[in-house]
Amino acid sequence: MFKSRQFTAANAVTFVVYGALGGLLFLVPVVLQVSHGYSPVEAGASLLPVTVIMLLLSSRSGALATRIGPRLQMTVGPLIIAASFLLFARLENSGDYLTVVFPAAVVFGLGVATMVAPLTATALAAAPADHAGVASAVNNDVSRAAGLIAVAVLPALAGITGDSYLHPAALAQDFKTAAIISAVFCAAGGVLAGLTITNPSRKKCVEATPSGSYCALEGTPLGTSVASQPAARA
Image (cartoon, rainbow, N blue to C red; front, side, top):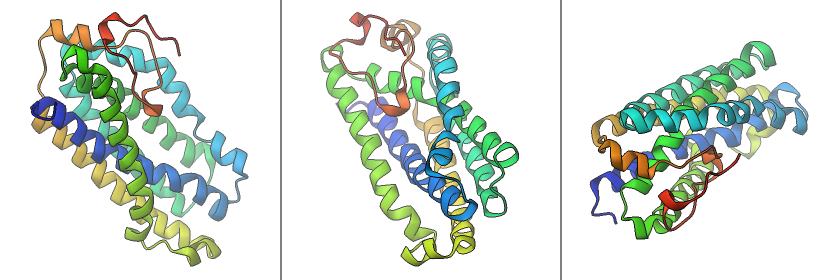
């Protein structure tokens, strides 16, 4: 399956972008609690706009990719996510929800909704129909591995240590560094998609795009033939 340039490119983009996502989303609730006094429930609920936006827009994003091909959305989506990470970097100075956290979460949700459905469909479409389940599993594993690696590596790159959690101001400052690093990786993922992803024929894109809506951020759809699956409901 990795002999397919499209399949390999889609998984490379997945690794880069999901690594950035996994690393920063691990740190956002932590810095909200430690540096800005959010409770665990408040920190988690602060990212609910991402879920709402994905529920509303993911299926539409997949439909758009069916019409125009996935390359544009897979290029622009990571760039939007990178912009949201730069907005999250403002947590260094303030944890105000309406002016800092909410705008960043909204932009992040828009970026994820733009990118994820086309990315998943591209990975599945690049594999033979009788290997669609394997292709989904590979793409899912790549995203999970990227997130796990990022959780281990990103804090170290940003200078976050065990002692940082005892010094809220220092943690917030180091979080800004982590957000910038993640933004760079996300932007690189967008550039990589623009250089390597090709738009398939419209017929193939229609066959590969999952019907209905699903939360692709939480995992890719499984099955032996996407075209034969009933519409999934969010």
